[in-house]
Image 1 (cartoon, helix red, strand yellow):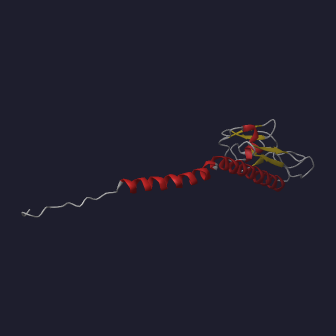
Image 2 (cartoon, one colour; image 1 turned 30 degrees about the horizontal axis):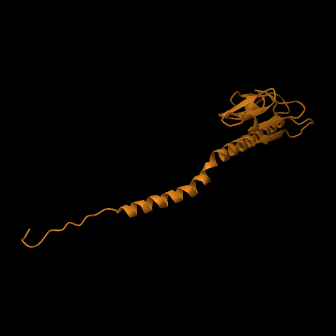
Image 3 (cartoon, rainbow, N blue to C red; image 1 turned 180 degrees about the vertical axis):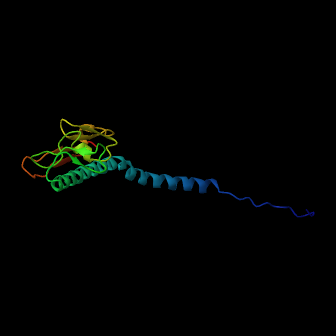
Length: 155
């Protein structure tokens, strides 16, 4: 350094006011964003239960088509079925409400419990499992489409 001149360093960084302003803005954004994401878990469970209902409907229709194609012989061999054979109800022509019936049609039941006595698929992770379920019931008449009822009030 030369005499008479004082070397001045320029300091870089953020001031306290700038940092507080950024934190306040992030807090405001979080306050608006959090309520939008808080209901996603329930919506995901409802979407999962509806997807299972769609799988049950399409699996039952596919099994019925194979049943008709095989000249109405039960059980039917269904490719991709976890057990291989699906038992078909002789009256309606759709899978029975049993383990080797409709449960054998659905590929993946991870996260669900099936009750073969009632034909109810219950979601295990639901806050109220009894109110988050899919019920499969056979039609009473010949060729009657089975009922698939979704209950998602407790999801």
